[in-house]
Image (cartoon, rainbow, N blue to C red; front, side, top):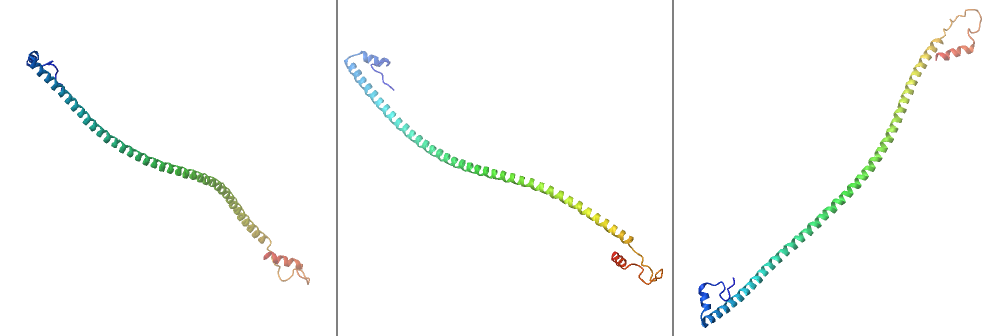
Length: 187
């Protein structure tokens, strides 16, 4: 709030005093001096207010800077934690990829082994079928040989002549070598 100088904008009483005598002029000079001192005091108070306001602003600025530094520290801490987690995840991912690669390699080896074993199994199955067929043929051959042997036995059965020779002579009825051959056939 500023006081007016030389009665400017003052009311009619102040204007009349200003227009009057020397004493009025001296009062007006004193009044002007008071106005100047008041203005100086107001500006000083304003400066003090500005200084107080500046101190408050400085205090607020310091608090804001402290909070900013705390937030920055917190952000750095969170960033370090995030980086540590990312590093762990990346390491886990690398280990998982390595496991997957090893698993793929092992799977390919197993597939190759399975194919080889399947081929071997196919060969073994074919050999087994061949052996079963040969066994069946051998059984059939054995049965055929047994049948033929029975037929030969039946065909080679010789009736032994009676103890009395049909014609009179003193030697055996059959030559000596022939009886032994007949005896072997029956065994």
